[in-house]
Length: 489
Image (cartoon, rainbow, N blue to C red; front, side, top):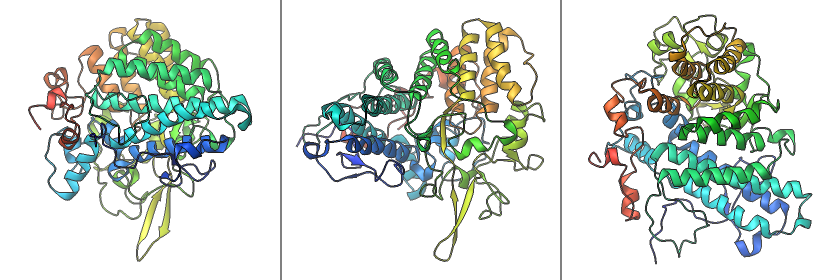
């Protein structure tokens, strides 16, 4: 038997969820073969739903923290004193060997890409087989196009996410038969991103703006979600001209509206007027007890923790970012700010469930991937990078106005950094900060991770990319270690 190219812990096969309405309520399972499964619209819908379920599994790996452990934990949002099984990630000490059961297992999960490729294989199957289903088996051509567009979106999203984490990753655009899979090396990040752009443009042409029903709002991809993904890909590449143009296509549509910042926390319950793409886990059949809420909340917002928050926010960062105490995002999304242990309460939509001799706190918060303020500030960032300072200020100040703040008063020379800071205020603990600081470092050379986490020399050497777990290279002999970490693993 040939070696499996990409180690996937789940069986590769047709993955499905149980219904459209509750399309993320359980793990996808393999119950059919490709020869017998792809017959009608509901089959295609279940298969696409399986792709979302696998993406959710990926972003919730390592105690439900995957999304935040990549995007927030290694930044200035958290104190270096954060001490727990994720402290090495907080310090960017990513080369530790797999040793203790808790620390080692979670680090291993974060250094592996298994579940990303499970989701990609699912998308590849949808891309291959949905076109083979007769048009007469769908309610409309639009329905078929939307499902195929979602599959292209999911493949692009997973590859973009991996490329931001590891840089070069193996590129596979066809469904892999386990018996036929072979070792392949890492593909250059530029080539992977080119494939992402191609896939997203295909998705944009296939997807509609409207949702089939309101229950799908933001938790399934529409044209706006695909455009948001494309804008972020361009920003990551430093192609700010195309980033600006793409963001405009979202903002000019007026499909999304800002949530009143007095009700800011409603955004994180999910499916708000501001949400563009989210991972659904706020319904009664969703949510979990190990999650970002468990690690960042305490009493009275999480009654099961009467001590200090497990993750410690960096008070200096809070003071620096939120330099105006009347900022509505600060007054509504943070608590206990006058104490030595302030907390962010964005994920405080908690339900308490009686279990066996214990009360479980279940978080009912969606993972917010893209939302309106994110895209408006990405537009401002692009304009500042293009030296279109007046237009950049207009976009920046629109977001500030929603928070009850006046116009930004810094200089043009500091505007790009100022917009990254504004993203830090607006998108605190939403999985963006790490990537924002990488773009800031690339554009300006300014380091805001914290010197103990990553200095300029480390950054220039590529420390911001994660290492691959050595176990992956034992499986695929053509893999090589991420350059910065090659001598450290």
